[in-house]
Structure formats: C-alpha cells, structure tokens
Image (tube, rainbow, N blue to C red; front, side, top):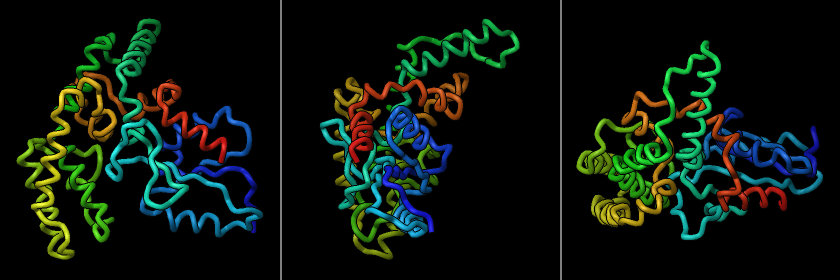
Length: 292
C-alpha cells in the first residue's frame, strides 16, 4: 500500500481537462511544496470518491486536503467577496462566482483574445481565423450584459429551484433546470414558460415527497425577480456573480452567432491570462492552499 505524503491535496470537479483543474494548476504553479490536484468527477460523488482515493494509501498523518468546486445555485453569494463554505464541511469550499466561466466572461479578456487572434491572422495569411478585428470592449460589454438580461427570468427560476433543492429530502432529486444542465438553455426564456416548466418539475417531485409546494416556489420567485430588477444589479454587474456562466456563454453565442466562439480555445487562453489578483476569493484560495 502506498503512503500519502504530507503535501496538500486539492480535489476539484470534472477531469484533468476541466476549467477547475486548469485554474487550480495556474494558482499553484509557483507555489512551493508538494501539491497534488485530483479531479474527482461530479460534486455529488465527492464523498465516496475521496474515501476511495484515501483507502488506497497508508497515511502517516491525517491527510490535508481541500475540495474546491463551483458554487452553482447551492449557496447565495455574500456581500463580501470570499470563498464560501458548504454545509458543515471544513474542507469543501465554493467559488464566489457561480462557476469558473464567470471569471472568464470578461470584456477585457474577450477583447484581448480577439485582438491577438486577429493580429496573428494579419501576420500569417495561412491562419484559419475567420473573424475580423475585435468590435471593442464597450460592444463586448453590451454583448455580455444583453445576454444576461435575456436570462433574468430563467436565472430567477433556477435560483428558486436551487433553494428548494437544498431543502433536506429534495437534495439530489430535484434539479435546478429541466434542460439537462447548465449551458443547455430552454427554447423559451420567458418568465411564463420558465415558471411552467419549473412548476411541472415541482409537481412531479411533490407527489413523491410532499414537502415542496407551488406556493413556496411563487413566493421565492417574486423575491428573486425583484432583486434581479434592481438597477444596481446591472450597473454593478452583479449578474456575473449570480447568473451561471455556462448559461451566459450559451446565450451570448445564441445572440451573436457570427462572433467568436467562447468555449474551448478561448477559455483555455483566458485561464492563462486571468489576473487572479483582481479576484479576492481566488487570492484567498491561493492562501488557503499555501497555509493548509
């Protein structure tokens, strides 16, 4: 049986090609000491995965580890920009923004990537870059915000389902969307259609559990809708914190399908060019790993 060293183990969601893994790799790149990043698949599978991982080793000391994952709709962000705890676990910490994509959907990053690729095309006629020059930071900012505004009703409904999902017996069974997952948007984003789809989910679940009611859904929906209607929510770009980045990215591509793709190549570039020092929670994550 192998022996676990006294280094630090950082678990994350997904596989070793995931954005979570890439971000953590960037954070610990210049960090002294022995640090191991272990992709553990889905967030609901972490407990049995970690038990199986450590069962293979003979430990000298209590293993030191952190499980860092997307916040999603599991916990509301606080007024302070910080890592968020999840449940009673001292080792599980959540990103402040909804997911890693939220940090990368930045007008400056998108503009700089677009500009770099365009300049490469100018210098290399054989380049396959098929887009022109960047439209500029202001237009890209509008692109992001207009896409987020289209998602307001859908995100309100997802937040309500997230609240209800965390009500004891609802955990795991009730989902925060009826589409299959984040980044898979419904055909209609209107409040009426999103409400009807969510109420259908609740109706099917309520028949089995009898703890979640349509009335509770409607009450919570009104509160989120009011919050997301506030002017400062948009002027302060709070949607980049509250709305799910995978959904924003998908809607951006739907609104401007002639613009650049914001998936694999851009996200890979953006991770490497992300300024961690602009995000207090990512600075905190680096310090947590260092001091673990």
